[in-house]
Length: 183
Image 1: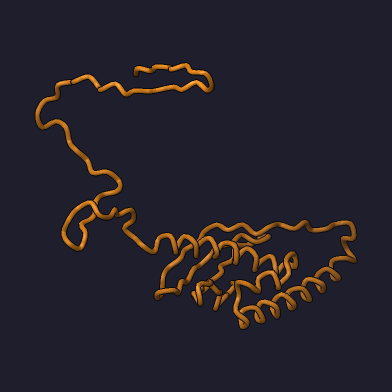
Image 2: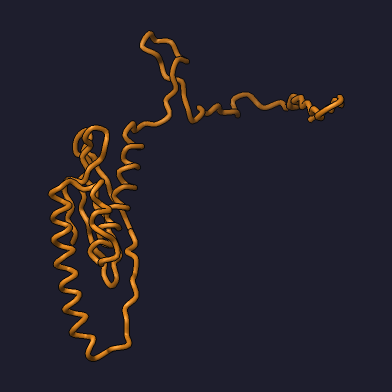
């Protein structure tokens, strides 16, 4: 590679000129030309070169967004049930029916936890359970209809694995959870 530097009063300018590769003779038929990752797609008029094709699945980006939202909503729902997170923090994502069902289940879960704490507080007064954040192990999303996705999430809770089924529907450009089932 040849380089040349030109010095003028002020900043130094570095000019790089490419050197052509040496001519290496190759036997005829041994070189295979592979297509690049982005290929030219024919235009409606039949001419090549007007558009590029980058992905075979046009809904791949949308599915990736829904999978990411599924992880966050599932983890947050389990945090609501354990009492670490407020139900109102999920009001943006859940429709009213799912929000009221999660609120009821969180209230029942909190009452059961208080009863369990009272039962064990007499025998083990100095033992406290630390909070374990639920970890998402797997997510599977599938498109049911245009603008509707269903996903299943496997989450490790304190002592067990839980399955969570979520249905997302797109309404006015926003994704809302219309069904949430926690196993």
